[in-house]
Image (cartoon, rainbow, N blue to C red; front, top):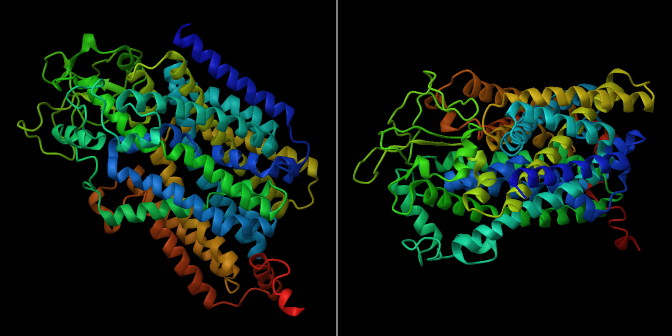
Length: 609
């Protein structure tokens, strides 16, 4: 059976499953639409949370980042996993005890202000749309390669699928769909990882691959040497920074970036709302534990997949002797991915060989393609300029002739390693599951924020439940269309776009939630001021450097846009506390509520008897 037929079968079967679940679990009330009726079991909620949280960035892009960034890529792993622990232990149980459907709902009631609720709605929409852009791009990438359609058409197909189970099913449909999606994506990620690790190191467990030795049957010259030692030597010979060293990125920026990812994770509205779908506060804690276990299964595999993927790429493209492979002899996977525009070759020295090294061979960045043709359109001039490395002919045998988009590393890995076609088809289904599961959760946050928090709680409080449910579905439809646009015009590769969303969440939501739970003195004036200023300065920094041509030498304290969310968060905290100290304290009943959500019912009863 051909790869195309297998891919259609795997992806088609998964789509049928998702839509079938959505129809079966269609929401019939606002409570079912917003929080799945509040009756989801902790284990099922843990799986749904893991699928919701492990987006296209985790499945498609994370191993690619680790593959190319090496040491610096660890910030993504530490930030995202550490942030989830922070959310599970510090915030989720208290938010569940507060008993509100959404983050804007919590902010509005805790800070006794419709203005605070409206600001939170704006923050939720801003963060969610930034995040969902990465998911829709991920869907487009997968479809463009495996279903042989354009990235634009892939995004449209993804929009249609999400429409069915997000608009019809609401949180109830999304929850049970995400349980199925987790099963698909974790199987699709770990099975190829086992094959790859076994092929390169002889070990079955991918978690052990990074510390293992290269099997001589994979490459005789590398055999018996540790994977990291081989990779370090190879990338340095090719002009890259050593895989296991910090490189040009400052430790200061790396630290701030990690903190932004952690705080952003803990402030993501689409993850927080998952803890409202279980019956009790205790169940919220248990489901958080299950989710952490399910997330760890994938995240402990990522470092090995990234490192082995880079080894495979170099071994395949540059050949066993490291001098390059003639284009006519390049394997099918290379030419297949060329047609998507996510990998490209230009013969710099005219020797007919494909040679991979540091730097970009194309002036002006990413090349563009039409079908299988590498058209000479005047925008793809050849350059020997090396980015981040000095060209030294004694250490670096040739200039770079290959453009590789890091978002394809996980998707192309099975093909590079010549794994069976059914594994390649499985990866396609898993990548789509990862992207769609998070996209659905984000779109629900957007629609809920508009229908429940903006209309029902602020603008039209007298609307009926039926009208509210209709407005939620209409808002979801509009959100899907806008999300599709952002998916077609993303400001970077998948994980980079997602990182920006985490920075925005860290600068806006995280301080307001933390202070709302742990500070009785924090009032509405402080919270509103902090959220507005934190979001504005972070968004302005991102827009200036990502869209207005700002130069890296203008970075504030050397911080990249992805890391600046930590500065926005600190400013948020400081402004909120200063303004709060200069304005009246919250009403006494609000202070009692804050104290009640932190102290278990019955505390101190034993001493009273």
